Image (tube, rainbow, N blue to C red; front, side, top):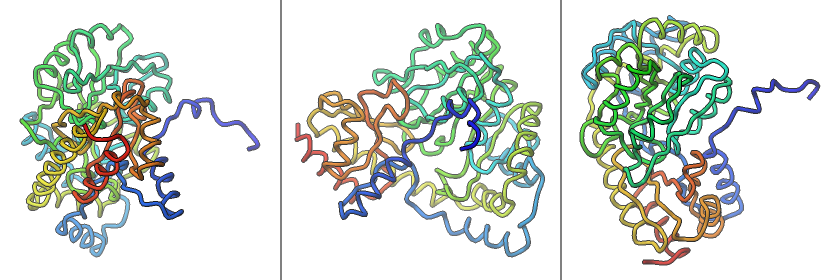
Amino acid sequence: MARALATRMQRLGTETAFEVLARAKALEAEGKSIVHLEIGEPDFDTPSNIVRAGQAAMGSGHTHYVQASGMKDVREAIAKDSTERRGVRHVADDVLVCPGAKPVMFYMILALVDEGDEVLYPNPGFPIYESMIRFVGGKPVAVPLLEENGFGFDLAAFEKLLTPRTKLVILNSPSNPTGGTLSADLLRGIAKLAVERDFWVLTDEIYSRVLYEGVHSSIAAMPGMFERTVILDGFSKIYSMTGWRLGYAIGPRELIQQMTRLQVNSTSCTAPFTQLAGAEALTGPQEEPARMVEVFRQRRDRIVAGLNAIRGVSCVTPTGAFYAFPNIRGTGLSSQQCADALLKEAGVAVLPGTSFGAHGEGYIRLSYATSIENINEALVRMERRFGAR
């Protein structure tokens, strides 16, 4: 390379799920049988009514540039759906439609975080949080998610991490990788601190409808949070639309306008036929998404029971998303050693907990967005490798 890359590129992380997938595919190419539990993607097809809506949109000419913030009818549908589900009123001008949900993280962090600003984020957590904080020159401050708290965190410990440099707090409930959820009481406590200490909140609620117990609580609906919270959500998980690349931000209009400027400078707009498919997802029949969640519940129950029958492994029951995050310390292996052994020796592709931060040591992540048959086979192979209790 003739010229050196920008220094900031050294601070940019990645997602190891795709690296593990590549290793697993290479082993399959050599003839080895692999059970894939590494990728967090629903194994269901996009519901047919959504596919038809996208096809009809393309057929009727919705293949050109549209408003950078998103088509108004689509933003209205998103605002209406969010208002009904979260109990906080938003309108179309509070919405930015993006090509996927990841841009919401990029745009908000780019818009808010200056060099040296501190950002609190969950650890173990989605690795792009820390990656983007570092990329813009911010200081990532890990908030440990603790198994003994159902992979929530202690409010008093959280408060001690706040400083005058705290600009933003990132929340994720239900969580990737743990499947844990943050209680309404904990969110109220964070909201009170946000008002007192004057920091922003990015609440990642991409799994908010993949929930098995209780009712989803959003910090955006709590007193004082309307003007300091951006909601990240999208269509990939609940509607099995990962490849459609469709997500959105909902938040204070002034910040949404600045995030829209970043979209103009990067992607211009989100594909209109994809947006119209998303509108159909929200306004059309909901039976298939509901059925998918029920299937995930059955898979969750099976994989948790099976993991708890393996020597050296224990697993709390996740309350949302589609991940199990078992404690593997009893095997005597580190997270990376355990993941490597399962891939090479047992033919089971999982992610080490450390892929999601230092506090993931002692754990591995398994995605149960796969068939019961695959889950059963993976459990048999894991028990063969480590033994039964």
